Image (cartoon, rainbow, N blue to C red):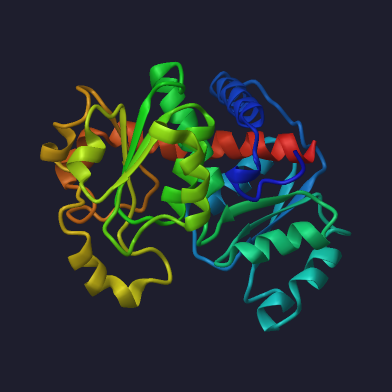
Length: 301
């Protein structure tokens, strides 16, 4: 495994190995066992989208592993002034041991990997969010002990989170159900992939049907970064796609709730439901740190 560009590229055993390593690193961190596995290594963090969890978890993670992070805003790099991605990749490959990029176009991530000579980690694109879903899978496995056979339900926009949850869930032998309105479906590439899994995947516009007997129910904001101008239209389109007590009654008793954050309470999830599942949601947020440390060690050691 040379890069983490999207979960579509990953084998089940590679995902499992990352989750196992993340569990080990989390255990060691909780028990004050140092693990400076990337001593002397440097990772560049390119941000073209704002961030809380991604930036803090990567910077903290590489420090705990003995390396250093360089925060590289697109405003500060020549790439923000029009330098081709391939030139930036070639230059940074001569300085750094890895790059994490959080941007809009998936092509930009793929081009960095194509022209660079160091590992590239996708911190988020409009197409997918592999780091977040690795943390989600880690959190789910912590609760249930397994992933295979569980039912993962996603309610809301067919965005980067939906795309990665579908791929990650199916690759780990989960059953995945997704409810989105017409016009807000997941990416066709992802749906073509999911079609190979037969009855293990369902897509519907009925949130209650999708949530039936779910072990895990996941949602995300209805208007992601770059979609602010669509907010009014989206608020109308997603009425009825809220995580609330009525919807959770269709899921299995004790079903867990996940949200990648930030959450807009009263929109995609009620304040009441969010607070009832806050421990699970913030454990998921913490696990970004451990899962991403595992990714960095896997790729950069």
